[in-house]
Every structure is written in C-alpha cells, then in structure tokens.
Length: 489
Image (cartoon, rainbow, N blue to C red; front, side, top):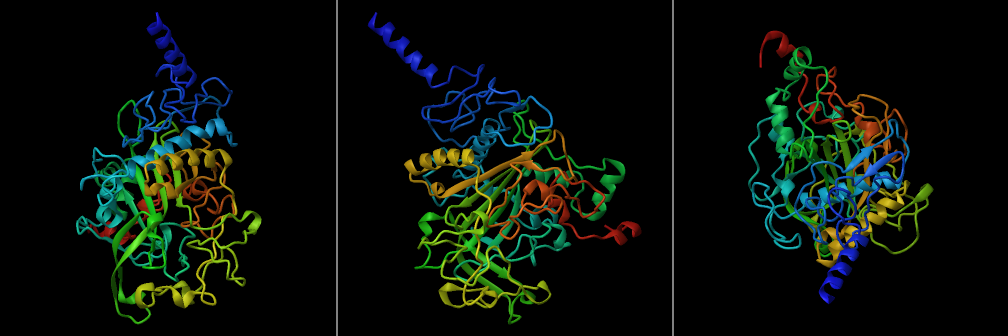
C-alpha cells in the first residue's frame, strides 16, 4: 500500500514537472524552464513534439546536456504573417539555438563525431564543428587542414585576402576591421557542414559558370537541404566565427574557448610588404550558427552567440561607468566615438608587424592608443536572456568554458518559404553581434543594417541572377563570364 502511494506521488511530481510524454509535449527535465505552449495562444504552438530541454533527443531527459544535434525547431505557426515578438513563440527558437550550440561545441574525434564524454572533458579534443569545411576547401579544392593549427588572417567578414573572388559580395557592409583593446585585428572564418558542401559541389555551384548553368537549366533559386525529424537529417549548417588574439599575461584565457592558430598574411596586406606567419593563441568572441530547417519554410535560423566580455550594454548609446574589462571597449577612451569603424586610405587596411607578445597588428589604426569602442545599443530580449541564464548556469555547474558565452538572439523569417532576395525582416527585427556586426547595429530596413535576415535577404551567387537562398557563401567564386563564353573551365 505504501509502495503504491509512493509511486503515485512520484507520478504526480513528474506530471507537475510537465513531462507527461512525447504526445503532449512539455518541459523536459527538472528545472528546465521551458514549457509547452501548445494551446496557450492563437499565433503559435511550441514544443508540440516534446523537443524541449537540455537534450532534444529525449522528451523526458532528466537534466543532462548532450551531444545530440536537434534536427529542427519544435514550433508550429498557427497564424500566417506573424511579424512581432512574443516570448511564447520565441522560446522554442532559443532552446533550439542552445541545444545546437552545445552539440556543435561537444568534444569530438578528427571526423567531427562527438565523443562519449561530458562536454567539460577532453578540453584539447576538436569540437564537432571543427570538422566542417572552410570556403577554400569547398570551392577551391584546397587540402583539408590537418595540422592541428587554425589558419587565420581574414581581418574583416569580407576579406580582404582570404577570398579569391569579389570579396565585396561576400558580406555587404562588413569590410571594416574590428580592433580589440590590445590593438589587434579580430579574425574571421566561415565554415559549412558536409551536407551543404556536398550540395554545392554536386550541383556545380563552385564556379561562376556552374552557377549560371544551374540558373539556366535547373532553377533560378537555390534551395539548400533542410533539417527535419522526419528525415533524420540535420540539414545545411553555416558557421561564422570571430576570434581575437590572446596576449599572455594580459588576457584571462580561462574565460574563452581557445585554439592555437597560425596568422597568415600575404606581403601585399602588410605595411612592410613582408608576409606574416606567426603562431598565436586565439579566443572565440563570436559565433553565428546558421541552420536551414524544414519547419520555417525550408529557410534559416540565425543563432548568434558572443563571449560575455565583448562589450557593455549601451542603450541609446549610453555606456555604463566602471572598471570592467571588455575586449572591444575601454572606458578610458573619453574621445572615442561609439561603434565607429577605423578609416584607411582607399579602405585598404594593412597589418603592422608583430610587436612582442602584444602583437598589435592593428596599432596604426588606433585612436589615441585605443582600439574599437563597441557597445550594444539594442538590448537582448529579456526572454532570450532568461533562457541563456539557465543554460549558462547549467554549464557553470560542470565547470565548462561555455558558461562565458551568451545567446544574443535566434532570428527567423516572418514569412513561410521566403527565399530572398527580399526586404522581409526577421523575428526579432533587430539582431547584431558585437563581434561581427559591430558597426551595423542600427536597424535600417532595406539596407542590410541591424538585422541578419535584412542583410541576407539580398544574397545572390557570384552569378548575380541566381537567388542564393539567403546565403552569401555562393558569392565566393570569382566572376569568369568570358570562360563560359569560350567554353573554358
């Protein structure tokens, strides 16, 4: 009798926790903080498949982080044309973002297969995403880098020297460098998973001529593969990463995910016209995790993460006083204009030679000895920050370095099956990463400023008639129309 009463009590507790089973959806795990929004409003339904919690693989996962990469966002839009911001609708996207972030940053083998260890173990092992391909590997057939060192040198999102094609088409408006408090350039790279790489290569989209052929004979719009639970496929994934150089004895590397890297800069991009090849330690300061999923009209979700020490919150341009140390803000610079890019003759930013352990590759563009002065002017949505607090506390409990990263937003399109180019805006409408859209935080619809979706809605391939499904990766190949006309490859 006592046993029956005990079992009944336990069952009641489980129901109160909101984990009645996959059929009804609901929270997944003790203190999870997410709950089913199946019938609570007329706009959307969230977690209808029970994919809420620390692990999307199991409806009633009891509190464990896991390496399972969610296949789709657990969300259903009941009403077409939804274009506002409702936390009940947004929560599913933010949990999807964190589930994806943790899974992709799980320790892995050299092929990107997650190891069967907790996320806080094997700190020197590769992460899952490190097996993804760089753009030179996808488009140019460059050999896979197995050296154990990252190869970096791209000091703006648009180049200047890593891309052989028209770099201005890669990321419009992002051709200004970001200089940290140690007067070093922030470094950038783009990677795609095997699903996307295979699609690009299979359809001959690695060249301008191939893109024109695709446009003429297959389709005027590219549609990258989407992830779904029905197929079991993860879909296309793009990663945009921002790194800063760690200075020994100055920067606290325990608060950053770090990697050894070789800085490679051609002579033409160096003040002294002597090529740079330096070995450094770099720390991750920003990550755009971009995933193509079936639920949202086979379109993308932009999950944007930052290291928490990037910059202060500066609503309306008003930054707080204090002694906090930020990567891209220094309160001592009273004459620095907030979120203002450096300038150079002809917009040609050259590298200075290394100056001891501090490096100072960007020192010639510093203002009175200070680097870029960056502050967040659009506050992160309160519901998103609340979810980040849950995840960061979870990661703190296991002493993981990922506790020092936060989600600044999960942006998705407000129109079903929208493939761009268009002026459509995302939800939330403003989303800018301080390490990647440092100077483009003000929302200006139709210009690409202040919003990932607003910008990527205009993406085309190198063959500019080709609708590139909101991805600038197809802008990598150089234009070579003459070769197409003459029949050369």
